Length: 126
Image (cartoon, rainbow, N blue to C red; front, top):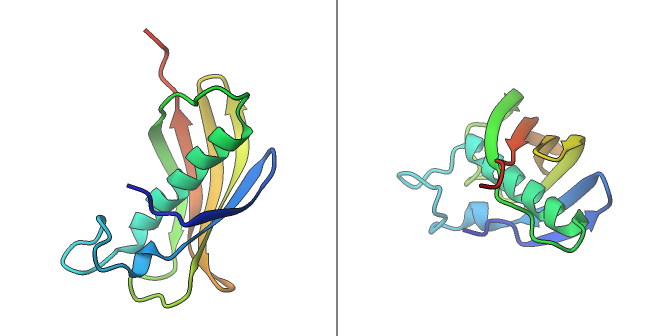
C-alpha cells in the first residue's frame, strides 16, 4: 500500500512528502467511507521509511516495527473530508543501529491535523 504521492524535500535529518490518497474512496484504510485522522500515522510511517531508504548507505533498509507512539495530537476527526493536499513531514530525533525516533506532522495548508512521535525498532537479523 503506497499512500504518499511524492517526496518534495529531504536531507540527512528530515523528509517532506505530499499525498492526495486521503480523498480516494478506494483508500484501503477507510472504514465505512471514513478515513479517521489516526490513519495519518501510517502516512507518517511511510515518510519515515522513505527517509530511511533515501539516507541509507545504498543498501536496502531492513523492515522495522512501530514500537510506540507518544504525544499524539489530533486536531480533526477524519482526513477524507480534507480537500487540500496533505503534507507529511518527519524529522529524525534519534537514530541507532536497531531503531529510530521521529517527530511527525500531517498538515493541510497551514493547519496541522496530526502530530506526535514514533519509535521504530529494527529487529536483529537471525
